[in-house]
Image: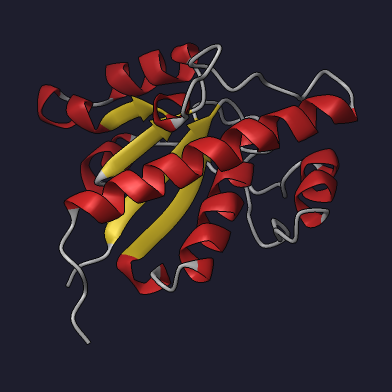
Length: 163
């Protein structure tokens, strides 16, 4: 069975999308389905290429037993829109950028993360970069809830892996 390829995308790939990558990795490991997924993250901008996740994002994630230390920022490219099965944007601006990058046959793959949350007040994960520590905690709360919903949906629509 081929792994479902999923890409999380924010602006610079140092706060929200690496956090979502880390959260989703933890969830698939906890549920014993890690082999069914290929998980990555990227940013629509290239300012932070090859840099680690923001120290505040790493600290907030570490407090939840999520390790972001191996993740390095990269910029999303056209090939990503073709390669990944599901592309998850953190906000409307990044979703728009992804839709511009993708051709018609791949635009259906681009979704907002909070579409998978139970009752979101908004469909955007707020960017915590210019705020305090509370912003990183709030972003993680939203990301965790939505990633649970996303994983539930992906598992429900794909056949079980055979041993």
